[in-house]
Image (cartoon, rainbow, N blue to C red; front, top):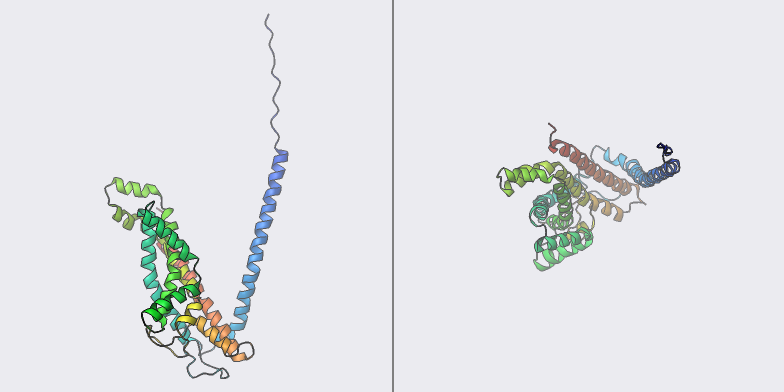
Length: 305
């Protein structure tokens, strides 16, 4: 007679202790991340509030956006920042015309062609170095090359050349990252249909990554517009409007802030208001570029079918 043995029921493992530990860790991480965000936001909001509170009176003046400071003294109220706005936009525009094609093409080469080649490795290394170069070093290099060696005069174009050195590595890095996130399946499908590589890049890869590339370009442009060292070294400040990029002193928003500081900002209320007004105007211009980058990125983003 055979005996039947009954297996004892196996108890399901309990995860109460493990679950409690995970909940505590999750809560702790949430608190730390939230606290870090608050700590980062407090000084940013404080700076923004201070600039708006002290510069709002200047930018609401009827002459601020349409007049320059030509003929104005530190003790004479009036005038505007038109000359500085024009100078900053001209320098940024020339910098963008030079930097954008170079930066985008270098990024395309590094992702699509330069993989493990020696030239690709050298280019990546040089881009990494340029990324960490201070603005004053770029300005001194352009001064030594453009002014001291080639004999050209200090000008707004020289400032743009220095800004190019600061803008190109940012564009290269953003272009690289955007191109790398394009699925390889798109490239392989195009190659399978017999499409040449150059046409695959121009017709499929770049349009897919274009929104991110445009965002990176505009953000890098907004970053270089606030640089001051190239302005101090490569061009003098002018209170009058100057549209000539190759000659004469030229106004700019960072230069206007520095000029008003030298004119007695802090002790004299008139240059103090102009200084804060120039700072707020620069923030507004950069904010417009950032918002424009968002809209352009959304416009160029691949449409969902």
